[in-house]
Length: 491
Image (cartoon, rainbow, N blue to C red):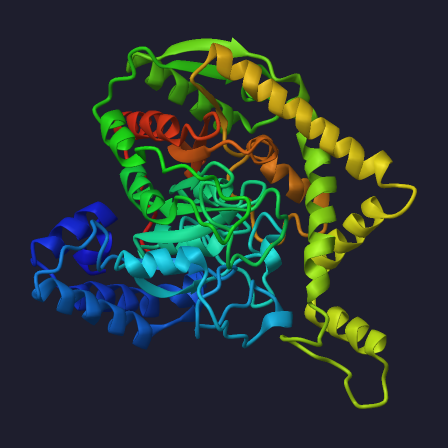
């Protein structure tokens, strides 16, 4: 493996700025790395070699002319295949969008291009971001670089695996119920879910509109913060976008890296204090809390009794919104069309197209959501779930009166073997047990490596109040400074 691929995004940015290496050389090294290990990892659905090299050359040309470029100009990145990219295939991991090349860029994509990042390609994912293991991709699973017999998390397992396998120093994910943080935890990487509305959803293929949040994947907290600063901020094209600037997440990460947490109050969520987690995960959680206390943090216990209802509330709200959002895939306007032989009705063509184009998990959630929204059941299911969401928000607000951030394990278990849970959806859904509350609340949360259990990575989750993303970066960077770095086995 080229030494260039081992560097963090911040280190690469500094070397590029100093002209110690060119953007084309950096892009080539990462493209060669992808070619070498993709057969074992399958992190990418599409590698845009020509586009990446052209973008890298453009950065080198600008730098040669003396242009003032950002700190990540020339740094490679992978983009989850649920984010639209003009002229580059975007499938959302589904056969129903196979071969679709969007005519426009998402706001996230535009901001990456403007900042000079070099897009290597589109990363694999559970179909329409519905899954916790990246086994529900229509194009085959992604494999965890730590152990290729195990899952890399989901739905953004491709982004996390690409970062963990040194195929890219950075990646973009989306988090609806934990799809950035949970893959980060099981691959030993850093994954951050910004405040809902803090990053634009324009051009994001919607799963659950009130929950979906794009965010950064990286190998270090500082790298995640640098990427967050690029993609965050108000977007007038997104009606849910918050008209406020991004907090100083980069400064907070660098402050936390000094290892001083004096005056920071850590809230241990009583309901999530390792209960229900594997022994090794619970032990790593306790050791991480002890490490943060040694850095000066004060520990307070908080109770969030409504958190225990988060999982069932989520699996009513998210499928209901997905049922509405995926109605647009009808085989008429774009994407797959099946059975249109001139003799079948529109309804028959739509039915055949959806049957052929959607996978089993997507169908399961559409059916569940349609049922929850149907006449006679709306108030009993969807309406009640929204009331629970309000209670969860109140629990968060009360907890943040006593604590600056809340901490909990990111996932109850380490990466499980491929195929071990696909026949039991409930066990699969439990992977997001600790991450879902932050999505229902809308606040930011980050997963940072917290050690190993049985030789596999464990993540600590740090949750903060809405628009206080800087707090979580400070605490995450402090923990990173106190925990030995994790390095996956060589592929």
